[in-house]
Structure formats: C-alpha cells, structure tokens
Image (cartoon, rainbow, N blue to C red; front, side, top):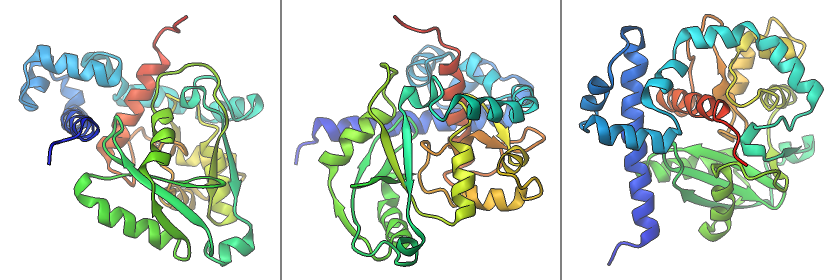
Length: 293
C-alpha cells in the first residue's frame, strides 16, 4: 500500500520533533557549559547548517537564542514576577494577547452529578495528529475539548486506554476528519482573534480552581507551584497543586508546562521534561518575535 501524503507529513513531523527533542535534552543537560552549535548538531547527527534550518523552522528562532530561553537565569527572572504576572492576567481577563495565538479559550466544568456519573452517555470523538511536539491524541465532545495528550505512535493503544479510564462510561469514536480541523488551529501561526475554543473539564473543585489559575499564565511566562497555590487562596498547598497539575489531561491548552519549581528547576511533566522544555522555549521564542502586519 502506498504511503499517503498525510502519513508522510505525520512521519516527518515525528522525525523532526524527535531530533529537536534530542537536541533539547542535550542542551538542558549542558546549558551551564554553553555547548556550541557544532556540538549540538553533531549530537543529533546533522551538519550545523541543516540542524539550524530544522531548529529554526520548528522553533522560529535560532538554537543559540533557544538555549538562552532554557537557562535558569531566565527562569529566575520570570519567577521573581510570577505573582504579579497572575494578578495582571486576572485583571486583564483570561484572554490575554498572544496566549494560544489569540485563541480565546472558554471552559465548562461538569456538574457534580455528571462527575459522579462518570460521563455516562457522553460521546467522545478522537484522533491522532502530528504537532510540533510529537504526535497528540485529541479528544472532542459536543461541549468542547476534553483531552489533549502527547505520545509516540507506538503508544497509541496505551493513550486510548488512559482516555477510556478517564471517561469510563463515555462512548469513544475515532473521527480523524473532525479532530483534524481543531488540531490544525491549535499550533497555527497567529492570525487575529478566532472563534472560542471551548474545553470540557472533569475534576474536583480544587483541581478546576488550579486549572483556572493555569489559564491565566501568559504564553512565554513561567510561574512557581507556590504562586499557583497563592493565586487560589491556599498558599500552603503547593504539593496539592502539583497533584492537580499532574492530573491535567488537556496538555498545552491548559498550560501546566508553564509551572516550574521555585528555585528555577523545570519540575516534572506528565509528557516528559524534554517536551516541557520544548514548549517553554517555543512559546518564549514566539513571545519575543516581532508582530507581523
């Protein structure tokens, strides 16, 4: 059977991200040594020229500038303002300029009765799609996006099993055509205000309050677990906040990757630290790009 263009595109995107991820892991492990472009390119078995082209196409910035976005000094500078960042975003509303390429994310939480019923009767459409950060599983309902997870193609069955475990009484239906339209919007370049992109959240009251706070973090910014705990009025609940962040099943859109440790370390991430570093650097690079038009 011949390979389709879509399959080729997906395979190439996966290969590109695998190389970028490998480079990010190398940079993150050695940023204090300031590795040279030649050293990073050699690590991923590419010439400096081809590596720079690949990385710039993926991140929108050079590998050298991206390295600076990953340094602890950059993290510390943002953490110093993390409380005021959240306050300012809250005062400005949840649809801060530049966040999610100007997509206005709305959300609807399940009622306690629906939560206890474990989504009985809910129909979930799902599909696997390439992204700049590897393949994702995108899950949609009539009320909004209910899942966005990252996984290699070899782990699709495991990802579906986790989706079913999260919504045990829902009906799951593959629908690549429906989910592809949404996936294409998520990582597209900014093109002005778009129609609302609703989310359907299923969690405890505490978890939803934490996820609400995450939605107030501007793109390209980083805040601490402690700042999130303070933002929801429970300054001593940093550990519980970490648990709620780890339970987030809508990656990227609910930006749990923007939360790092107080001392500047990246902290954990459900879909891998290299991907978390990639998301942070990718957003920071775009936050500093000049406006077009």
